[in-house]
Length: 334
Image (cartoon, rainbow, N blue to C red; front, side, top):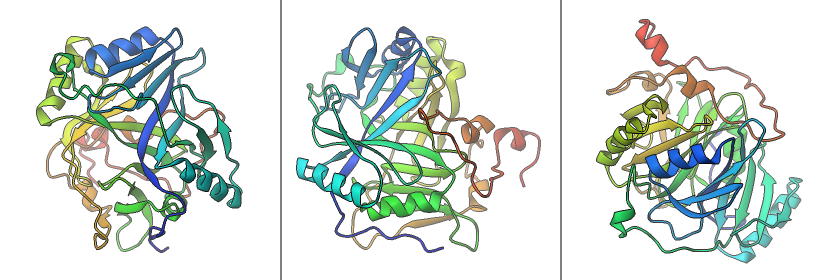
């Protein structure tokens, strides 16, 4: 299989990861976790919805939490395009690709286009959103991890090659990838439009399912501070993985599970990846078993994720056998 190349020019101008919409069972519990412990800012709230953003974000929301009686899910993930004309081009592109796309009204967003990608991930695109004052220098309002802005989302899917081909055709650039040794069999792909390593990531597993949304923080100390404050609020057990450092992307990180089981990453230290001569960085699967420091993730990090409504997860053709924390502690490092 060939490594896909980004289409240039892109059929329409996607600019970045924008927002994630999650359903939760108790908005009060979610508010305590995201606002009081992690430090997100509230843009708006009502009896059924909580709209959150980071300290650097002027756009109304990057994380939307909706109360629902059913099992918690991820409704969809959002991407921004540059202009209204790009939305029209997107609609025409998806129509030609036989991917049903529809215009919808979404609170606090401009005209919004909803569609599912080639592996079934529910997406929405918008060009505009209401704004609120940036809080980046409003230091009395900084607390917890002090999330600054949304950076990327990760999706588990059964066909990483197909996902990579779909987003490459939209002009997304492959910054890094993990492949089976001595082959181009893709297991993880890190795809970007905004000029750092990724806006959306796909990993080989049953899916499509939502793995996590990642928010940047000012520095490594804020990751540790997030752990301390989360622990003081009784969320110490919600730290699933980290603090640690990734190989791909090189970011320092911590992964938390919220009260409904959704996964949030706080991280820093991304690099630029925008010049035309920048080629994707390859990581062999065997190398990923040799962490420079720190422990591997728990089994849950590889296997558990949030469902999308009405989307039945499909198993990949080849199931992985990653080195989990449980296997590592049992002495099985193969």
